[in-house]
Amino acid sequence: MSPKATRSDPAPFPLPGVVDPWITESLVKGVFNNNLGPLNEAVESAKTFNIPQMNDWGVKNVEDFLLFLSGMLNWVPSEICSGKLIYNTQCLLYFILDQPPISKPPFSTLIQPSSAGQPLEPLSQWIVDFANKVGGWMSTGGSITSDAVKSFEISPKYNYDEAIVPPDGWKNFNQLFARHLKPGMRPVSAGEPTDPDYDRVVVYPADSTFDGAWHIDDKAEVKIKDLTWKISDLLAGSQYASRFEGGTWMHAFLNTFDYHRQHAPVAGTVVEANVIQGQAYLQVRSDPETGELRPHRSYICPDTKRNEEKGLFGTLDAPDDAGYQFLQARGCVIIKNPLLGYVAVLPIGMCQVSSVKLAWEPKPGQNYPIQPNVDIKKGDEISHFEFGGSDIVLVFQKEADVHILGAQGIDAKGGVTSKQKYLVGMPLGYSTKGLLPTNNGHTNGHH
Image (tube, rainbow, N blue to C red; front, side, top):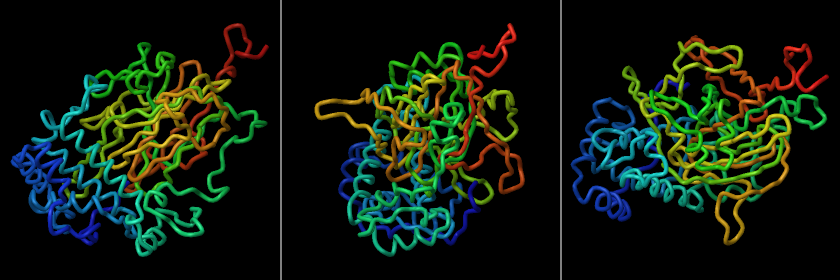
Protein backbone atom coordinates (compact mmCIF):
# COMPACT_ATOMS: atom_id res chain seq x y z
CA MET A 1 0.00 0.00 0.00
CA SER A 2 2.81 2.37 0.79
CA PRO A 3 5.54 3.55 -1.56
CA LYS A 4 9.13 2.79 -0.59
CA ALA A 5 10.39 5.09 2.12
CA THR A 6 13.03 7.45 0.90
CA ARG A 7 15.61 9.66 2.55
CA SER A 8 14.33 12.72 0.74
CA ASP A 9 11.25 13.42 2.90
CA PRO A 10 11.52 17.01 4.09
CA ALA A 11 11.02 17.60 7.80
CA PRO A 12 7.32 18.28 8.56
CA PHE A 13 8.37 21.21 10.76
CA PRO A 14 11.62 22.60 12.18
CA LEU A 15 12.46 21.34 15.65
CA PRO A 16 11.97 24.22 18.09
CA GLY A 17 14.87 25.42 20.22
CA VAL A 18 13.25 24.58 23.55
CA VAL A 19 10.77 22.03 24.87
CA ASP A 20 7.24 23.40 25.12
CA PRO A 21 6.21 24.04 28.76
CA TRP A 22 3.09 21.90 28.29
CA ILE A 23 5.23 18.93 27.23
CA THR A 24 7.44 19.43 30.28
CA GLU A 25 4.54 19.67 32.72
CA SER A 26 2.24 17.00 31.28
CA LEU A 27 4.72 14.40 30.00
CA VAL A 28 8.13 14.83 31.63
CA LYS A 29 6.69 15.58 35.07
CA GLY A 30 3.14 14.27 34.82
CA VAL A 31 3.78 10.86 33.24
CA PHE A 32 7.46 10.16 33.90
CA ASN A 33 7.90 12.03 37.22
CA ASN A 34 11.06 13.70 35.85
CA ASN A 35 12.65 10.28 35.16
CA LEU A 36 13.18 10.15 31.39
CA GLY A 37 14.97 6.79 31.54
CA PRO A 38 12.01 4.76 30.19
CA LEU A 39 11.32 7.26 27.39
CA ASN A 40 15.02 7.30 26.51
CA GLU A 41 14.96 3.48 26.27
CA ALA A 42 12.00 3.72 23.89
CA VAL A 43 13.81 6.22 21.64
CA GLU A 44 16.96 4.06 21.65
CA SER A 45 14.84 1.00 20.79
CA ALA A 46 13.28 2.87 17.86
CA LYS A 47 16.74 3.88 16.59
CA THR A 48 17.73 0.22 16.14
CA PHE A 49 15.20 -0.04 13.30
CA ASN A 50 17.10 2.51 11.16
CA ILE A 51 14.05 4.62 10.38
CA PRO A 52 15.14 7.17 7.73
CA GLN A 53 12.94 9.93 9.15
CA MET A 54 14.51 9.72 12.62
CA ASN A 55 17.88 10.66 11.16
CA ASP A 56 16.59 13.06 8.50
CA TRP A 57 14.36 14.95 10.92
CA GLY A 58 16.94 15.11 13.71
CA VAL A 59 15.21 12.83 16.22
CA LYS A 60 18.36 11.20 17.57
CA ASN A 61 17.79 11.13 21.34
CA VAL A 62 15.12 11.65 23.97
CA GLU A 63 15.68 15.43 24.08
CA ASP A 64 15.14 15.60 20.31
CA PHE A 65 11.93 13.59 20.68
CA LEU A 66 10.61 16.07 23.24
CA LEU A 67 11.37 18.86 20.74
CA PHE A 68 9.59 16.83 18.03
CA LEU A 69 6.50 16.59 20.25
CA SER A 70 6.76 20.32 20.96
CA GLY A 71 6.90 21.08 17.24
CA MET A 72 3.70 19.13 16.62
CA LEU A 73 1.81 21.50 18.93
CA ASN A 74 2.25 24.30 16.36
CA TRP A 75 2.57 22.22 13.20
CA VAL A 76 1.41 23.67 9.89
CA PRO A 77 0.80 20.46 7.89
CA SER A 78 1.91 20.37 4.28
CA GLU A 79 2.39 17.58 1.79
CA ILE A 80 4.77 16.13 -0.77
CA CYS A 81 4.08 14.40 -4.07
CA SER A 82 3.73 10.94 -2.50
CA GLY A 83 1.08 12.20 -0.08
CA LYS A 84 2.97 10.51 2.76
CA LEU A 85 4.50 13.35 4.78
CA ILE A 86 1.66 13.69 7.30
CA TYR A 87 1.35 9.90 7.35
CA ASN A 88 5.05 9.41 8.10
CA THR A 89 5.00 12.10 10.79
CA GLN A 90 2.21 10.33 12.63
CA CYS A 91 3.82 6.93 12.13
CA LEU A 92 7.10 8.09 13.66
CA LEU A 93 5.33 9.54 16.69
CA TYR A 94 3.41 6.34 17.42
CA PHE A 95 6.29 4.02 16.56
CA ILE A 96 8.43 5.59 19.28
CA LEU A 97 5.58 5.66 21.81
CA ASP A 98 4.93 1.96 21.15
CA GLN A 99 8.48 0.84 22.01
CA PRO A 100 9.42 -0.98 25.22
CA PRO A 101 9.36 -0.35 28.09
CA ILE A 102 6.69 2.35 27.73
CA SER A 103 4.32 0.28 25.54
CA LYS A 104 2.86 -1.57 28.55
CA PRO A 105 1.69 -0.82 32.11
CA PRO A 106 2.46 1.11 34.21
CA PHE A 107 2.77 3.50 31.26
CA SER A 108 0.39 2.31 28.51
CA THR A 109 -2.95 0.52 28.52
CA LEU A 110 -2.88 -2.97 27.02
CA ILE A 111 -5.01 -3.63 23.95
CA GLN A 112 -7.09 -6.43 25.43
CA PRO A 113 -10.77 -7.01 26.29
CA SER A 114 -10.29 -6.39 30.02
CA SER A 115 -9.25 -2.80 29.21
CA ALA A 116 -12.68 -1.92 27.80
CA GLY A 117 -14.35 0.76 29.88
CA GLN A 118 -11.39 1.07 32.26
CA PRO A 119 -9.39 4.24 33.04
CA LEU A 120 -6.36 4.68 30.81
CA GLU A 121 -2.79 4.27 32.02
CA PRO A 122 -0.93 7.62 32.34
CA LEU A 123 0.88 7.60 28.97
CA SER A 124 -2.23 6.40 27.11
CA GLN A 125 -4.23 9.22 28.70
CA TRP A 126 -1.47 11.69 27.85
CA ILE A 127 -1.62 10.61 24.19
CA VAL A 128 -5.35 11.40 24.19
CA ASP A 129 -4.64 14.80 25.75
CA PHE A 130 -1.85 15.43 23.24
CA ALA A 131 -4.12 14.46 20.34
CA ASN A 132 -6.79 16.82 21.64
CA LYS A 133 -4.26 19.64 21.96
CA VAL A 134 -2.91 19.11 18.44
CA GLY A 135 -6.48 18.81 17.16
CA GLY A 136 -7.39 22.09 18.83
CA TRP A 137 -4.42 23.80 17.17
CA MET A 138 -5.55 22.43 13.80
CA SER A 139 -8.79 24.40 14.20
CA THR A 140 -6.93 27.72 14.56
CA GLY A 141 -5.85 30.08 11.80
CA GLY A 142 -2.18 29.46 12.56
CA SER A 143 -2.45 25.88 11.29
CA ILE A 144 -2.65 26.83 7.61
CA THR A 145 -0.77 29.01 5.12
CA SER A 146 -1.13 29.65 1.41
CA ASP A 147 2.07 27.69 0.75
CA ALA A 148 0.72 24.72 2.72
CA VAL A 149 -2.54 24.80 0.74
CA LYS A 150 -0.55 24.80 -2.50
CA SER A 151 1.28 21.65 -1.38
CA PHE A 152 -2.05 19.80 -1.06
CA GLU A 153 -3.20 21.10 -4.43
CA ILE A 154 -0.22 19.51 -6.16
CA SER A 155 -0.15 16.25 -4.14
CA PRO A 156 -2.08 13.82 -6.40
CA LYS A 157 -3.47 11.55 -3.68
CA TYR A 158 -5.42 14.41 -2.11
CA ASN A 159 -7.53 14.84 -5.29
CA TYR A 160 -7.80 18.50 -4.42
CA ASP A 161 -9.93 19.39 -7.48
CA GLU A 162 -12.77 17.24 -6.06
CA ALA A 163 -13.10 19.61 -3.09
CA ILE A 164 -15.37 22.60 -2.67
CA VAL A 165 -12.92 25.39 -1.85
CA PRO A 166 -14.52 28.10 0.33
CA PRO A 167 -14.81 31.41 -1.56
CA ASP A 168 -12.67 33.17 1.05
CA GLY A 169 -10.21 30.27 1.38
CA TRP A 170 -9.49 27.75 4.12
CA LYS A 171 -9.61 29.21 7.63
CA ASN A 172 -7.67 26.37 9.30
CA PHE A 173 -6.23 22.95 8.55
CA ASN A 174 -9.18 20.97 9.93
CA GLN A 175 -11.47 22.74 7.46
CA LEU A 176 -9.29 21.54 4.59
CA PHE A 177 -8.88 18.07 6.06
CA ALA A 178 -12.66 17.62 6.48
CA ARG A 179 -13.31 19.17 3.06
CA HIS A 180 -16.66 18.79 1.33
CA LEU A 181 -16.73 17.42 -2.21
CA LYS A 182 -18.37 18.92 -5.27
CA PRO A 183 -21.81 17.52 -6.19
CA GLY A 184 -21.63 14.31 -8.22
CA MET A 185 -18.17 13.26 -6.99
CA ARG A 186 -19.54 10.20 -5.12
CA PRO A 187 -22.54 8.65 -6.92
CA VAL A 188 -24.44 6.16 -4.75
CA SER A 189 -25.10 2.65 -6.12
CA ALA A 190 -28.83 1.86 -6.29
CA GLY A 191 -29.18 5.29 -4.74
CA GLU A 192 -32.79 6.16 -5.62
CA PRO A 193 -35.61 5.00 -3.32
CA THR A 194 -37.47 3.78 -6.41
CA ASP A 195 -34.64 1.39 -7.29
CA PRO A 196 -35.67 -2.22 -6.49
CA ASP A 197 -32.23 -2.78 -4.94
CA TYR A 198 -32.28 0.41 -2.86
CA ASP A 199 -32.30 -1.50 0.45
CA ARG A 200 -30.46 -4.60 -0.78
CA VAL A 201 -27.28 -2.89 -1.96
CA VAL A 202 -25.12 -1.72 0.95
CA VAL A 203 -22.60 0.94 -0.07
CA TYR A 204 -19.25 2.07 1.28
CA PRO A 205 -19.73 4.74 3.95
CA ALA A 206 -16.23 6.15 3.45
CA ASP A 207 -13.41 6.42 0.95
CA SER A 208 -11.46 3.52 2.41
CA THR A 209 -9.41 0.40 1.83
CA PHE A 210 -11.40 -2.79 2.43
CA ASP A 211 -9.76 -5.06 4.99
CA GLY A 212 -12.24 -7.89 5.48
CA ALA A 213 -15.48 -9.11 7.01
CA TRP A 214 -16.02 -11.71 9.71
CA HIS A 215 -18.68 -13.71 11.50
CA ILE A 216 -20.01 -12.75 14.94
CA ASP A 217 -20.78 -15.79 17.08
CA ASP A 218 -24.09 -16.55 18.81
CA LYS A 219 -22.88 -14.81 21.98
CA ALA A 220 -22.31 -11.57 20.02
CA GLU A 221 -18.55 -12.03 20.36
CA VAL A 222 -15.60 -12.19 17.98
CA LYS A 223 -12.27 -13.88 18.57
CA ILE A 224 -9.13 -11.97 17.59
CA LYS A 225 -5.68 -13.40 18.33
CA ASP A 226 -7.23 -15.88 20.83
CA LEU A 227 -8.86 -13.01 22.73
CA THR A 228 -12.65 -12.74 22.88
CA TRP A 229 -14.07 -9.28 22.26
CA LYS A 230 -17.71 -8.41 22.87
CA ILE A 231 -19.74 -6.52 20.28
CA SER A 232 -21.39 -4.84 23.28
CA ASP A 233 -17.97 -3.32 24.12
CA LEU A 234 -17.51 -2.15 20.53
CA LEU A 235 -20.97 -0.55 20.64
CA ALA A 236 -20.25 0.62 24.23
CA GLY A 237 -23.48 -0.42 25.87
CA SER A 238 -25.83 0.43 23.00
CA GLN A 239 -29.33 -0.85 23.70
CA TYR A 240 -29.11 -2.61 20.32
CA ALA A 241 -25.84 -4.49 20.98
CA SER A 242 -27.49 -7.88 21.63
CA ARG A 243 -29.28 -7.80 18.27
CA PHE A 244 -26.08 -8.60 16.36
CA GLU A 245 -25.65 -12.19 17.57
CA GLY A 246 -24.62 -14.39 14.65
CA GLY A 247 -24.22 -11.37 12.40
CA THR A 248 -21.32 -9.95 10.40
CA TRP A 249 -18.83 -7.14 10.98
CA MET A 250 -16.54 -5.55 8.42
CA HIS A 251 -13.49 -3.32 8.71
CA ALA A 252 -11.91 -0.78 6.34
CA PHE A 253 -9.33 1.93 6.92
CA LEU A 254 -8.81 5.45 5.66
CA ASN A 255 -5.49 7.11 4.99
CA THR A 256 -4.47 10.65 5.84
CA PHE A 257 -5.05 11.85 2.27
CA ASP A 258 -8.55 10.35 1.90
CA TYR A 259 -11.85 12.24 1.91
CA HIS A 260 -12.81 12.21 5.60
CA ARG A 261 -16.60 12.51 5.64
CA GLN A 262 -18.73 9.43 6.20
CA HIS A 263 -22.08 8.67 4.61
CA ALA A 264 -24.97 6.33 5.33
CA PRO A 265 -24.36 2.85 3.85
CA VAL A 266 -28.11 2.18 3.93
CA ALA A 267 -31.28 4.22 4.20
CA GLY A 268 -33.50 4.13 7.26
CA THR A 269 -34.17 5.72 10.62
CA VAL A 270 -31.29 6.82 12.86
CA VAL A 271 -32.45 5.31 16.15
CA GLU A 272 -29.28 5.95 18.16
CA ALA A 273 -26.16 8.10 17.90
CA ASN A 274 -23.26 8.06 20.33
CA VAL A 275 -19.71 9.37 20.67
CA ILE A 276 -17.62 7.00 22.77
CA GLN A 277 -14.53 8.26 24.55
CA GLY A 278 -11.47 6.06 24.29
CA GLN A 279 -7.83 5.81 23.33
CA ALA A 280 -5.82 7.48 20.60
CA TYR A 281 -3.60 4.67 19.35
CA LEU A 282 -1.84 3.42 16.24
CA GLN A 283 0.27 0.29 16.00
CA VAL A 284 3.19 0.90 13.63
CA ARG A 285 5.69 -1.61 12.27
CA SER A 286 9.00 -1.08 10.45
CA ASP A 287 9.96 -2.72 7.16
CA PRO A 288 13.20 -4.57 8.00
CA GLU A 289 14.66 -3.85 4.54
CA THR A 290 13.81 -0.17 4.05
CA GLY A 291 13.04 1.09 7.55
CA GLU A 292 9.70 2.27 6.14
CA LEU A 293 7.04 2.80 8.78
CA ARG A 294 3.56 1.52 8.16
CA PRO A 295 0.53 1.16 10.41
CA HIS A 296 -0.47 -2.45 11.12
CA ARG A 297 -4.24 -2.13 11.03
CA SER A 298 -5.23 -5.13 8.92
CA TYR A 299 -6.88 -8.23 10.33
CA ILE A 300 -5.97 -10.61 7.51
CA CYS A 301 -2.90 -12.14 6.02
CA PRO A 302 -2.66 -12.49 2.20
CA ASP A 303 -2.84 -16.28 2.45
CA THR A 304 -6.09 -16.33 4.42
CA LYS A 305 -8.83 -18.31 2.68
CA ARG A 306 -12.17 -16.63 2.19
CA ASN A 307 -15.66 -18.07 2.56
CA GLU A 308 -16.86 -17.14 -0.92
CA GLU A 309 -20.50 -17.69 -0.07
CA LYS A 310 -20.72 -14.62 2.13
CA GLY A 311 -17.44 -12.92 1.40
CA LEU A 312 -16.30 -13.67 4.94
CA PHE A 313 -12.80 -14.48 6.12
CA GLY A 314 -12.79 -17.46 8.45
CA THR A 315 -9.88 -16.47 10.67
CA LEU A 316 -8.32 -13.26 11.80
CA ASP A 317 -4.60 -12.90 11.26
CA ALA A 318 -4.12 -9.70 13.13
CA PRO A 319 -1.45 -7.33 14.40
CA ASP A 320 -0.18 -8.01 17.89
CA ASP A 321 -2.48 -5.39 19.35
CA ALA A 322 -5.55 -6.22 17.27
CA GLY A 323 -8.86 -5.21 18.76
CA TYR A 324 -7.93 -1.55 19.20
CA GLN A 325 -11.23 -0.59 17.53
CA PHE A 326 -13.01 -1.80 20.66
CA LEU A 327 -11.06 0.73 22.77
CA GLN A 328 -10.59 3.73 20.47
CA ALA A 329 -12.48 7.00 20.54
CA ARG A 330 -15.32 6.39 18.11
CA GLY A 331 -18.78 7.26 16.93
CA CYS A 332 -21.66 4.80 16.76
CA VAL A 333 -24.70 5.37 14.57
CA ILE A 334 -27.48 2.75 14.55
CA ILE A 335 -29.71 2.84 11.46
CA LYS A 336 -32.93 0.81 11.25
CA ASN A 337 -33.52 -0.28 7.67
CA PRO A 338 -36.87 -1.80 6.60
CA LEU A 339 -35.17 -4.82 4.97
CA LEU A 340 -31.89 -5.28 6.81
CA GLY A 341 -32.98 -4.43 10.34
CA TYR A 342 -30.38 -2.69 12.50
CA VAL A 343 -27.06 -1.64 10.95
CA ALA A 344 -24.30 -0.17 13.15
CA VAL A 345 -21.87 2.30 11.58
CA LEU A 346 -18.75 3.06 13.62
CA PRO A 347 -16.31 5.77 12.50
CA ILE A 348 -13.19 4.92 14.55
CA GLY A 349 -10.79 7.69 15.51
CA MET A 350 -7.16 6.82 14.83
CA CYS A 351 -4.10 8.44 16.37
CA GLN A 352 -4.45 12.21 15.88
CA VAL A 353 -8.16 12.06 15.08
CA SER A 354 -9.06 13.57 18.40
CA SER A 355 -12.67 14.19 17.48
CA VAL A 356 -15.32 12.22 15.65
CA LYS A 357 -18.08 14.65 14.73
CA LEU A 358 -21.56 13.16 14.20
CA ALA A 359 -24.30 14.86 12.22
CA TRP A 360 -26.50 14.67 15.34
CA GLU A 361 -25.47 16.31 18.60
CA PRO A 362 -27.07 16.40 22.05
CA LYS A 363 -29.26 19.37 22.88
CA PRO A 364 -28.14 21.69 25.70
CA GLY A 365 -28.20 19.71 28.93
CA GLN A 366 -28.22 16.39 27.07
CA ASN A 367 -25.38 13.90 26.68
CA TYR A 368 -24.66 11.10 24.22
CA PRO A 369 -26.12 8.61 23.45
CA ILE A 370 -29.11 10.28 21.85
CA GLN A 371 -32.07 9.00 19.82
CA PRO A 372 -32.40 11.29 16.78
CA ASN A 373 -35.25 9.23 15.22
CA VAL A 374 -34.72 10.94 11.88
CA ASP A 375 -35.02 9.33 8.47
CA ILE A 376 -31.99 9.46 6.18
CA LYS A 377 -31.38 8.47 2.59
CA LYS A 378 -28.59 6.18 1.51
CA GLY A 379 -25.51 8.32 0.96
CA ASP A 380 -26.52 11.11 3.36
CA GLU A 381 -23.64 12.44 5.45
CA ILE A 382 -23.56 11.03 8.98
CA SER A 383 -20.17 12.10 10.39
CA HIS A 384 -16.72 13.46 9.70
CA PHE A 385 -13.23 13.24 11.15
CA GLU A 386 -10.80 16.00 11.87
CA PHE A 387 -7.03 15.70 11.57
CA GLY A 388 -5.55 12.20 11.12
CA GLY A 389 -6.28 8.79 9.66
CA SER A 390 -9.21 6.65 10.71
CA ASP A 391 -11.09 3.37 10.41
CA ILE A 392 -14.67 2.46 9.61
CA VAL A 393 -16.54 -0.57 10.96
CA LEU A 394 -20.01 -1.82 9.98
CA VAL A 395 -22.02 -4.41 11.91
CA PHE A 396 -25.00 -6.29 10.41
CA GLN A 397 -27.64 -8.52 11.95
CA LYS A 398 -27.74 -12.23 11.09
CA GLU A 399 -31.17 -11.97 9.48
CA ALA A 400 -29.96 -9.23 7.13
CA ASP A 401 -28.28 -11.93 4.99
CA VAL A 402 -25.69 -9.45 3.78
CA HIS A 403 -23.07 -10.91 1.45
CA ILE A 404 -19.88 -8.83 1.47
CA LEU A 405 -18.42 -8.39 -2.01
CA GLY A 406 -14.77 -7.76 -1.06
CA ALA A 407 -13.36 -8.33 -4.52
CA GLN A 408 -9.85 -9.69 -4.88
CA GLY A 409 -7.36 -7.53 -6.72
CA ILE A 410 -3.65 -7.16 -7.37
CA ASP A 411 -1.37 -5.14 -5.11
CA ALA A 412 1.59 -2.99 -6.15
CA LYS A 413 3.89 -6.02 -6.06
CA GLY A 414 1.63 -8.17 -8.23
CA GLY A 415 0.27 -10.27 -5.38
CA VAL A 416 -3.39 -11.11 -4.82
CA THR A 417 -4.99 -8.92 -2.18
CA SER A 418 -8.44 -8.08 -0.85
CA LYS A 419 -7.23 -4.64 0.20
CA GLN A 420 -8.79 -2.60 -2.56
CA LYS A 421 -9.59 1.10 -2.33
CA TYR A 422 -13.27 1.96 -2.61
CA LEU A 423 -15.08 5.29 -2.66
CA VAL A 424 -18.22 6.44 -0.85
CA GLY A 425 -21.29 5.00 -2.58
CA MET A 426 -19.60 2.04 -4.26
CA PRO A 427 -21.23 -1.38 -3.59
CA LEU A 428 -19.99 -3.05 -0.40
CA GLY A 429 -22.48 -5.90 -0.07
CA TYR A 430 -25.82 -7.29 -1.15
CA SER A 431 -28.66 -8.77 0.89
CA THR A 432 -30.33 -11.96 -0.34
CA LYS A 433 -32.98 -11.76 2.37
CA GLY A 434 -36.29 -12.96 0.94
CA LEU A 435 -34.73 -14.11 -2.34
CA LEU A 436 -33.60 -17.66 -1.56
CA PRO A 437 -36.02 -20.60 -2.01
CA THR A 438 -37.38 -22.26 1.13
CA ASN A 439 -38.05 -25.98 1.60
CA ASN A 440 -41.62 -25.58 0.34
CA GLY A 441 -40.38 -24.18 -2.94
CA HIS A 442 -41.52 -20.63 -2.23
CA THR A 443 -39.22 -17.67 -2.02
CA ASN A 444 -38.95 -16.15 1.45
CA GLY A 445 -41.16 -13.10 1.65
CA HIS A 446 -42.88 -13.79 -1.70
CA HIS A 447 -45.70 -16.26 -2.37
